[in-house]
Length: 384
Image (cartoon, rainbow, N blue to C red):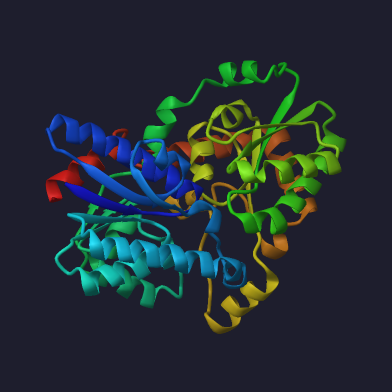
């Protein structure tokens, strides 16, 4: 059986790799000869699949932010479409990555109508106020959706799409997480040291728009907490020189670590993180967090003025229960002063900290059960 998988961004690469490994295990059990070709990143490549092209470095959010990546994305999509037409797979699997994946799905629906399309982890367009067109496109191109959120499953089922809720794959990943004690020992952290994980970057645009304000906040926190130590995971190795330069510029007492490991998250007393899958990882590790995000002012002005853009929440932690479990500082509110204020509240106010941990338990209960990737792989092979 030949499967083509398409995804982008760092989180998509991780989730794609976990799915591929589960597919390989299930195929071995069922004695299925499986060939997988993919668009993704280094983690997917490490599973041994034929990686047609790398997408995490050309991922972005926002209208203006996407401009530098239009040409490389178009070239990669053209390559993928040509491959699909010359080598029609038995199944096309799309993972998140809304714009590029919808384009590939529409192409396959038109030129390869015999190839079923399965969407795993629907883009969060189902949360946006401007979601009507995107929803219609997703329903049009998708034969079956494997949903990771129960709300997502209900939404698309109401739109007439065939849906299964499998749970969130991050539950499987967290089975590999170290204990807090082992993680702190790895970084030689003493009991009196406060460890703060800084997680502002997984896309190139965030080096410019998000990293500086997070480093400014870290500098102010270091002045107030002399024993603080910052742990900074590297999402992509290309970003390491910039991260190192910013650490030096702001004089941070910090360790830059491998972003593939969960050690830095498990060792932390607090995290300052961009919105994304990492928020769920922190919640499952019981690490309080401040979620921040910024776009270019022009992008946000266009979205608010012409597209009526509005979302109830940015962080998956809050989306799961549709309540503010963790503070979100978006755009105008994402200032160094606000980040410091929220961080100190979570670090020094026992009641606030305990409330966060109690709310995390509710989030955990809404994510499903461990074994998500195996269930997804079984459904995929049974569907074929």
